[in-house]
Length: 157
Image (cartoon, rainbow, N blue to C red; front, side):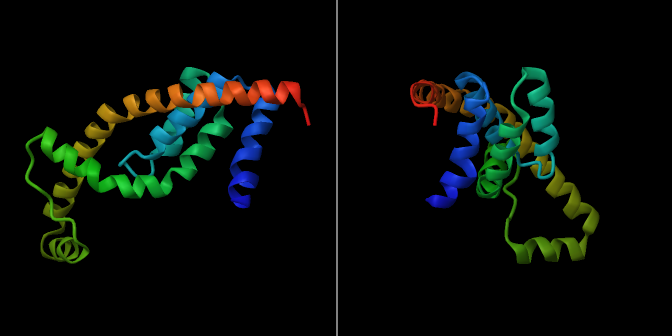
C-alpha cells in the first residue's frame, strides 16, 4: 500500500495542488487507462499523446495511467480478440503458444495474416467498448477528485 500511495496517489495529489481540475484529472486517468488497454500493443503511448493534445488533458497523468494499464492490457487481449471474433463472425483463433508457434513454422505468412486479422478485429472491439468504459470511469472518478481537491484546499499541507 505504501508503494501505491508513494508512486500513484501522491503524484496525483501534486497535480491537483498545481491546479489540475478534478474533471481534468478524472478524464486524463480514464482516457489514459482506456488507451492503455488497446489490443494493438505498442500504440498506446502515441494514442495518449494524441488524446491529450486533442482534449487538452494532462499528459503526465495520462502516461502514468497508460503504464499502469499494462497488466490490464495483457489480461484484456484475449477478451478483445474473442469479442472481435463475435462482431465479425470470424473463426475462433486458437490461442495457445504451441499451436501458434507450429503455425508460424508451417506457414509464417498465413499465420501472420490470421494473427493480424484477429488483432484488427480486437481493435474494433476495443474501439466500441473503450470510450464507454472511459466515460463511466471518468464519471466515477470526478466526484472523488472534487472531494479530494476540496479537502486539499481546506488543509493545504
